[in-house]
Length: 280
Image (cartoon, rainbow, N blue to C red; front, side, top):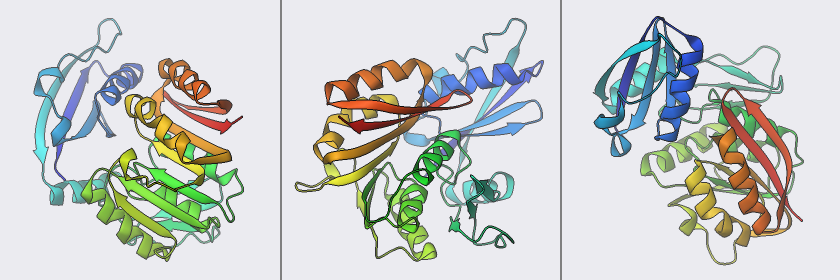
């Protein structure tokens, strides 16, 4: 997988302007962001990169300007930069410790998920991943059948398996993510519980039925695929969604209601939102 890195330098620096710009870039498919002293770096897969829009982002704060510089990042460079500058161990709800193979175990948190940082999105640092992990840790997952759509590194499906899920189907459109999920499942000893599939919603098979659906993608894909998810949900199944903003919530909830689901809970972290929905 190849990425483009776009470095934004703000003059003068404004944290609020950075948040506004990151929100706009998220809508354009940018996956990860690193803070710098005078702005931030934004990363996007090369297939979604559009040079024409990188200087059209609006900080929406009077007097704040910026410069943008783009460069292509090779896999090896991306992995090294991710591990060195961004992938740090994190605690999740004081219950789990997410770390890389190179990190030491936590002295007082025995539960852990190990993620080899080969993919920037899905190591627990992003607000959307954190909210989904919080949802999962607040649920009873023992004996449940779980689908993880857009699995990335596989972190959410791995967490579900460690929390007692009977089985997990992890799905991603990117072969790199599929391979990375398989590797991470082996690192965590859950490879026998997790089936990894290449594709999108079409990778769901006739006869699939899940108790919990996890979909941390973007609004358009969620709206397009929600009906397919619903078709593979049981009578009392739960749907967890993230990867969108406050202005998207009404559309997503409306679509869910059309499909016979109701909103149970909403989470907010910075500009990102997550929803917990259930069949009526």
